Amino acid sequence: MPDDKRYNKLKHESKIFMNIIKMICYRAETSVANLIAEMLSNRDNHQERE
Image (tube, rainbow, N blue to C red; front, side, top):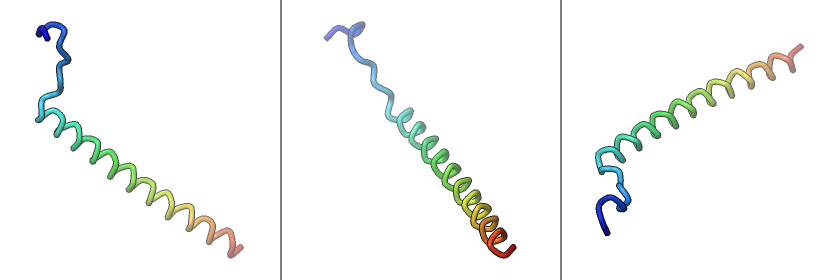
C-alpha cells in the first residue's frame, strides 16, 4: 500500500501516554464520586435524625 494512503497508527509511546491520561482521569472521577457519595449519605443520615 502506498505511504500516502496508508493508515497512520499511533506510535507505541503515544498510546501508552494516552492510556496513562485515561487512568488518571478514571481515578480522579472515582475519587470525586466517592466524596459525593459520602456527602450524600451524611446528608441522608442527618435528615433521618430530624
